[in-house]
Length: 159
Image (cartoon, rainbow, N blue to C red; front, side):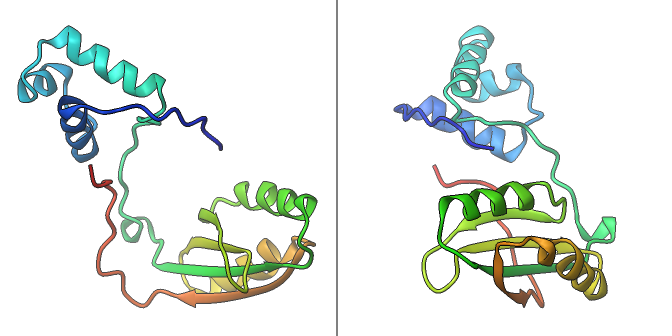
């Protein structure tokens, strides 16, 4: 999914709203307005403007992967067999459809992509690599790094 980014200047109230929404997106407009010293209508107008300009791209529930049986986090470095736009497009289209791939980033260095992948256990990750990821024709090499312990993961952007 690609977004058209419109860079807009954020004043202090916009930054306060964004900080509050990152912390709890279910906060009511009335509560947000009170906290940032606005009335409800101007507060809602600001939120709508932030959504329209794609500063706010959505609202999500934060889930605990371990509670859902997803206990293995892996970063996979992927090198494509050829350095072409068609190979990159084919790869990106395929991995976007794979539910276990949480993130896909184009990187510099000896690999082309970095994938963040989640799985129930090492056996399911191995199966995923063999039958899903490994079946993409344009991949030359996959190097996996298993996360032994994640000490923290921040969801909030610094404002």
